[in-house]
Structure formats: structure tokens, C-alpha cells
Amino acid sequence: MPQSLLFRSFVLISALVMLTTASWLVIFRHADAEPRAKELAQLTTSAVNLVRAALYAAPPETRPTFLNELASREGIRLLPAEDDDFVLRPPPARFFDLLQEFLKLSLGPDTQVALAVNGIPGFWVSFRFEPYDEDQFWIVLPKDRVKHGMPFHLLGWGVLALSMALAVAGLIIAHITRPLRILAEAARRIGQQQMPRLPVNGPAEVQQVMTAFNRMSEDLRQHESERAEVLAGISHDLRTPLARLRLEAEMSLSDEASRLAVVADIEQMDSIIAQFLDYARSEDGEPPEPCNLHDVLSELAEHAKALGKPCVLNFAQHKVLPELNLPPRTLRRCIQNLLENAWKYGLNEGENQPVELSLSTENKQWAISVRDHGIGIPEGSADHLKRAFSRLDTARTNANGTGLGLAIVDRFVRRHGGELTLVNHPEGGLIATIWLPLNS
Image (cartoon, rainbow, N blue to C red; front, side, top):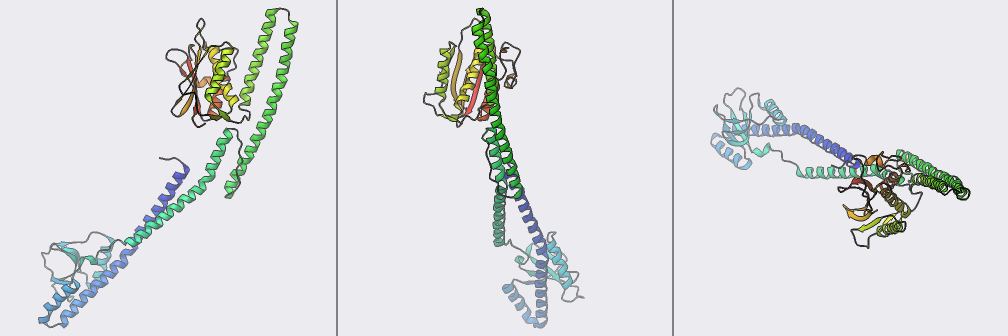
């Protein structure tokens, strides 16, 4: 079942409308029983009085003719009541209780009501011609006198009114939840660092929420701007002294081994600073551009080949692939991080098995995979490795690393609706896969 606020609110309001309609229907049937019972009792009393008066006034020889005429024209019959009559009482209902009560008030306390006598259906009412008479008679009216058919025309109007009420309820709920949908979409865009601004309109409560959201968005935009300035200053202030130290080491140290060690330390410091800046900077406002994954992976493989690092490129699809709108520089940096990890931690000594870089599609997603041939990772440690500054004390750990490479990749992939997975290969090694939606 849908779990949205729109669906739940519509179901609750619909249930309220239908419950109210059902309640009014019950109240109507309850209130309608008394006037119908009173009307039928008056009609029956009038028929009894008419028969009684006509029989008293008519000569004895014309009474059978009168009774036959009354039965043929009006469907009213007069029969004597016997002690052994099999009487079918009406079902217990407020309508029949009120009807019998009204008839007893007008015809006498011994009055009986039946829906059939001796298997003959009809509306049977007993009475006496005189209160002191011992003999009783049945006056039989057509059975349809006690039937109350469903007023289908009113039922149709009721269904129409109920449908209109539900439609209006749906419109009201859609109008109420629309600002929430707009707010949810804006929050998602903030997660992608787009910093949207929402229109301030609608009810007062909605305007307050939109105003607070816009204020938060503006504060975040200012924070991002200040962070970019701080990062630019850190990059300049740290890398300039490192460049001078490297130049001084190149010029002042005569011992080759010492000079190379100092230069290596400086390069390591520069690399660590670059990773910190990459993690803090994220995409740094880099706009998305159409990226052809085939071209991106081919460039990275050629660059690895130029550096003398083992890398094999595999494509499961044709060379002509649809393009994705992604920040190209950040995408390359993320794939490069996976390749660097594979070269650093996934190559066993004495073996020359290259890192495998592949591209395929599965379950409507792009899969960019980097496989090494190392010892893999311990079971259950994949989520730990994707956290910032997290490293394992195993063969995959390197003292020169910062633990930010996989965190940078994971944050980039999640920001674009994808996922980073780390799975040990059955034949050895680790497969790091970037999953991205086909419509990224």
C-alpha cells in the first residue's frame, strides 16, 4: 500500500465522508420508520372502517357481491379468523413494532399483524366488528402495502454527492501536500549543492516554512562560498612552502639518497594535502557536462599505460554509448582513486597481473568496475572502508594513505543517485564498482 501523506490523508477523509454518509442513512431509515408505520396504520384502519360500515349498511343478499368487488378492485379481502390458523409474524423491526402499536390504538388491543396466514402471503390484520364480539376477522391487504422499496433515484443522487465529496477531498489533500512535495524536491537539490530558492506563497504556515527554508538555503550558499575561499587559501598557503622546500632540497642536499628521501616526503605531504582538499571541496560547484563513459575510461587507461602501471580495459557494450550528465573532472578523480587503491593495495609481490577496468550495464544501471588481484578485504568491512579516515590494519592498509579515497568516491556516487560496492572476487582480489543510474 502507498505510504504517502497524500494517500493516507485521502483514505482518512474518504473514510470520514463514507462513515458520515452511512450514519445519515441509518438516521434516515430510523426516522423514516415512524411516519411510514403511522401512514400504513391509518390506511389499514380506514379500510377496516370502510368494510365494517359497508357491511352494516348493505342488505345481506348484496354483501357477497360487495366483498368480491372489493377483492377484485382493491385487492382487499375479508376472512374469518380461526383458532388453528398458522400465522407468520413479521420480523422484529422498529417499523413493524410501531405499526402494531398504532393499529392496537385504533382497532383494539387484540389486533394482530401477520405477513402470511396458512401459507397465503399478504398484509393480514385482525379486528372485531364490535369490541364485545368474540369472533375475529382478518382483513387482507396486498403485501406490497408493507414493502418499502429502495428509492433508487435518491440513491443515485447520494452516490453522486459522495463521489463529488471524495473528488473535492482529493483536490484539497493534493493542494495541502503540494508544498510538501516542493519542499522535498528542494531538500533533495540541496543535497546536490544546488541551493534552490522556493516561492513564498500559500497559507501562512506554508509561507513560514518556505521563508525558513530560503533562509537556510541562503546560509548554506554563504557557507559554501566562505568554504571555497578558505580552501583556496589553504591550497596556496601550504603548497607554496612545500614548493620552496622541494627547491631547497634539490639545490642544497648533495647526498643523492637524502635528497630523494626529502623530495619523496614532500611529494607525499603534497599528495595528502590534495586528498584533504578533494574531500573538503567535493565537486566545488563543477557543473555537470555530457560525459561518454567509454571515452573517460579509455583516457584513464591510456594515462595508466603512459605511467607504466598495469591496467586492462574491458567493455561489455558497443563503443557508441549514451552520455551521462556528470561533473567530468570529479568523475575522473573518483575512478582514478579506485585505480590508485588497486595499484597500491591489490598487487601481490612477485605477480604481474594488471588491474581490470570494465564498463557494463545491469538492472538499468551503469557499472564501472575496478578489479585487483590482491588478498581482498575482511567480510563485513566494506561499509567501514567507505567512511572518511577509515583504514584497515591488514595488507590493504598503507601508512601513506589518508583513508579518504573511498569516502570521496562514495559521496560522489550517492550524490548522483548511485552506490559504491566493494566485493571480494571468488578467484581472489577485490571488485570496487561504481553503480550509476542510466538516466544520470
